[in-house]
Length: 246
Length: 112
Image 1 (cartoon, chains in turn blue, brown):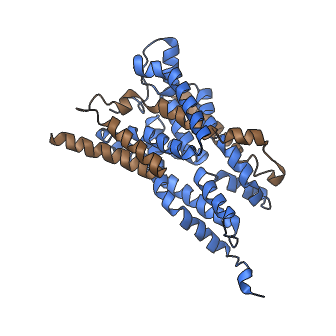
Image 2 (cartoon, helix red, strand yellow):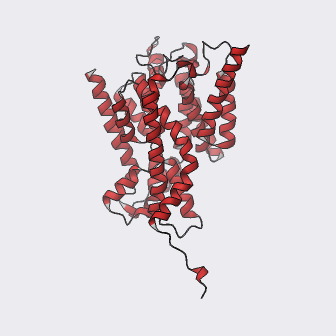
Image 3 (cartoon, one colour):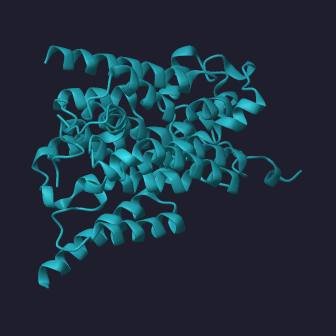
């Protein structure tokens, strides 16, 4: 009997390291995303402590960015919460797909693993599970990817919070917001039907916000734009994320 | 001030627990829980639709057409970043190309 047929089971540490190694290239993008989220939270009127607490409580960059933009535009609390949660609905899908891998874990462990679930950790782990990497300890591998992302993102947040007020306005850091959404959109479109769904959503958004954005020149974020458009009046932001930076 | 603090606390609590609930929805009950196939298929379209809507909403004239710029440099920077995003599907390269080209164009404009 050949030993080549026996799969080598990696140790927990080696599996964790393999996850960390696989996620390393992505950490480079988690860092600036974290910085922008940190800056956005400050610009939405949060204190440094609040911004850090908010980032640790939510740990989902795109929804943090949306929440802070809506907060900056003076949107009602319910709108902020619903908008931030809407973008996180995709976690339901990830949770359903990855749940069999963690079925033997205890309840506190499952909660911790759930908290760390992100787009990138899910994508990398599922690719490794589906590939010919049978020797991996799956939870340890996932932890390597997810913890790496968590640390890089929160480090970015800390940098954004510390640098936030000192960033020169002419750097145009607010321009990175559409850039991030553009990058996220291109990664989310995986087939033609998704591109159609994206086009319909973009058209809907343009019809709802467009007249306010481009004709009446109201610059108060999605909620502000919509409310301003519906009320028919000019409205300026009380907080500065969307309008005060040139 | 107090109402802002209350709003922050409510948003943090609701978005934090709501997001955790979405993440844990199927992990906590284990493999016994299953998402209906139709719902799962529909959920796959959520990120693309949401990000497209947000992208359009985030394209404020002040973000993309900057009144202070001597020439409108943000539009070509955005176009270049879009091409990079489509080619690489990388957040890092998209930010680097968009911000990098904006800063480069701004610097070139100051030389003119």
